[in-house]
Image: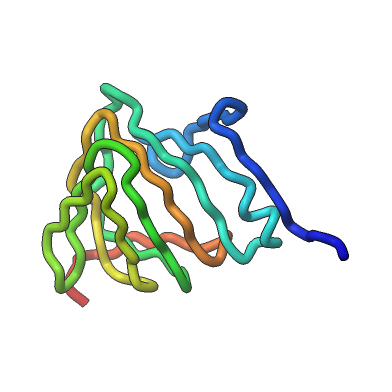
Length: 130
């Protein structure tokens, strides 16, 4: 029997890179390659002192998105839910295409995010109200 798609990503060997958001660093976990693009996962952390440039309402065209806060806090505003503060140990499932925006985060923020599919699209929208 062949085990297809097995991957391990150790923090000690990991490399954080700049990504979609200029105030966060991303450590890609290899899940996209292991699942042939069905899912992606990354460990994100705030860049201390980097100016927060988020806050624009947007949607992610996904089939699944989960955020787990490892350290610190992050606040989002979600359509029909309002302000939600996620703290260390908090997990949130963001339904596909839910309108949301980041309000702010702590300098020590670290999160784990898992999204399906790996090549999802992000679209800026006018407001949180449909």
